[in-house]
Image (cartoon, rainbow, N blue to C red; front, side, top):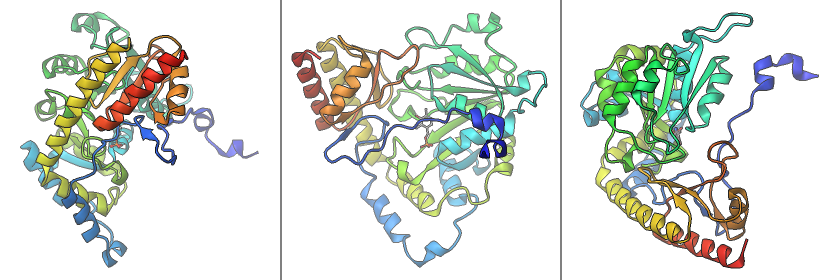
Length: 368
Ligand SMILES: *Cc1c(COP(=O)(O)O)cnc(C)c1O
């Protein structure tokens, strides 16, 4: 058998399960938090304009122009920025740069620990497992708020010495937002590196980017995928102290970021007002959808993101998932505590949200 050829930890590994990308006609896709609106026309034009014989050439290896442009946007230096093949690549690189794997038979120390709150992005434990790191999970409050700092301070289950701590802010899958001041108190408790995963920050009233420029141990993670409609091209970036950025830069692939992605991200930054208008539309739809679902007796958590976490009335959420799918609406359900009774619903365009509400009414009146 081939098993002996494969590392034991890889044999045992439970791989990350991404949301489905089905090719079913007419399906309304509200399961992976993509932006319902297309990239700005000028972005598509820039990508088309770059699609010619030059595809045979390697792209800029350090995403230099993009890093300079992002540095201007965030009022920092290009040395504060690293671009990745999606932010997922950077999250994995952070494990490799900052966390020691646990050697077989060796003692665990803080240097081995990847820490994260639960529930949050389900990729973090998988990245820890891939790296043979130890995992430390700390539960969020029942309403998905961060635990009070006094408790974190004295509770030994919160690993102050963890080599790496991931915080999804605003939180996914709940949509709960966190104040920068509160995040700063948590970062100050931690001796290792903290990655603030700000994937969904563009729909939130505030961000914590300044912490990455003020504190040596904090990296802020951003992505063009969701807010800027570029999932397909895989562009994410970290902002942080030049020494942390340099460490990550040392271990990345030499051409980790594809050229069309760099072109598209640069053009995106020239058209931010277009995206701002789309965020406004998404926020309006979010408030409308939340109110409509509550009228149908869904329990809906407040959201600072482009999705809602909602507990449907009556039958289990897994049955709702299937019933909605029959109506050609795809949402996300996580078979895990404490969110098993919830659906995570991406805020689509207004017409998509309206279709979801119609489908929910139909399901309720048919008596699922
Ligand atoms: C989607 C998502 C990412 C990954 O984004 P990419 O830049 O597309 O790799 C990271 N963190 C969270 C919380 C996400 O939801």
